[in-house]
Length: 53
Image 1 (cartoon, rainbow, N blue to C red):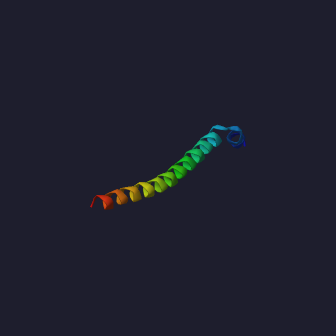
Image 2 (tube, helix red, strand yellow):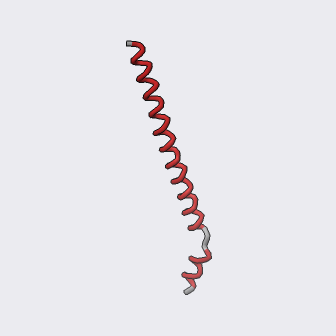
Image 3 (cartoon, rainbow, N blue to C red):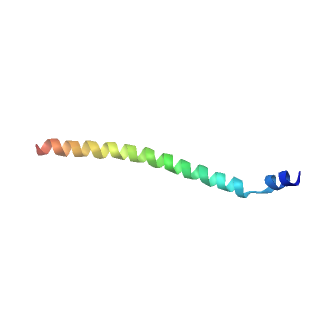
């Protein structure tokens, strides 16, 4: 019973999980931003290549 109460009172695990969730959210936002930016850069490069030839 003592060990169970220690685990409930311990906030280090909860903090680590919160940081992990924040990092995952930032990663998902970054991937979405890079996909959008990548599409725009690709179309810009294709337009430049077509005008050069």
